Length: 459
Ligand SMILES: [Zn+2]
Image 1 (cartoon, protein in one colour):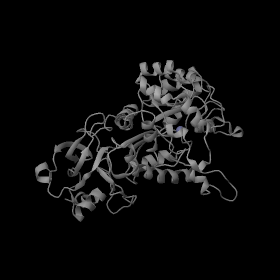
Image 2 (cartoon, protein in one colour):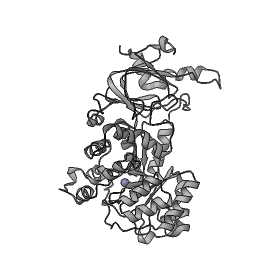
Image 3 (cartoon, rainbow, N blue to C red):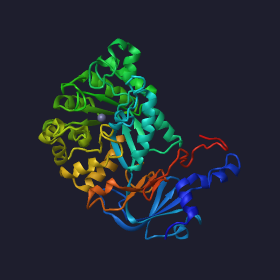
Image 4 (cartoon, helix red, strand yellow):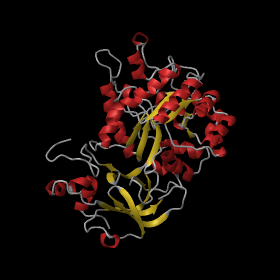
């Protein structure tokens, strides 16, 4: 039974259908309850547990209210007549996916399209990056990722896009942003020019040396709006640098202590055992990449509960870069850090490094995880519950009552064939339908429940 046209429009535009009620209501009157019913053919409410067939998910004010056996209508569910019903009877429904490592402000195709080349000036500007982040955030949500962590944007473009999404001004995933990645002078994320090596330039870029300066760098990113801190402990596949350790233990400790005091998690870009061990001992929450980690350091990570964010996709650059049998693939396959971490039971979150390849291709990380021995269920659990745990978000990651209604649907069964996650048919974020029948809701007037829409005013 498909919803009628009014119901469809209500589901897509959610708030528009009840906004006039608000506008006409008494000043200060509480907004009405907003319900959506979701008929799910197969429901994986809690990754790691078994699926249920023919379920009705009751969404109330953007949260999962309860789940009922069978397909029920408004009366039977005890919700107001006319409540929109989303028909996913032939779909596999699961929690919204989460990616712990993206770079929303760019991707390889930008330069190919000549972005930033103006009158011979090749540098891209914050304005270019902001536009990119708007576009790529939207594509990321369309790919089923309802929460992502942007780790390393040297300007404030992603803060602006995050805030616009949170304010209901545009469609996009929930974003946690680190702002600039902290780096030692000359390190992986040091983008400050030598001539501009003044304090303000260094702070904006996140460049710091010595514990005091690194503490200050943490405070500065926090002041700009960072949700977490990222620092780079070594070079990487994408840099011209070596894998030698760049930030040292006292600096790492200062960063982690300051970040934790300010209630921010710390993500550490690190490849080599010594740099990873120092970051873990300093109290870092996650090791990003970690391609050359040794078993002793993995044991330390397991003991401390430190997460590995494997970014396998970062080692497999896309074919259009023209690199045949790249060094990164050879080294990845030689060390097999992901396989060893999984076998040892280290916490593994889901992270791709999208931005080093094109956005919305995040699901290819699932292919690598499963190819390298992880079960599809564990891969889905990593991209939902485990990543939520790493983020410190207890209201997402499953579809249990009380959780935020972030849910997606695919045609195939990802537990049988993980590649089903490449083709996302439906996306609901915070109880609002963003994509249906493979079509993204197209517009910037995306108003989640509770937004302060001004009568007659645009946003
Ligand atoms: Zn990265």
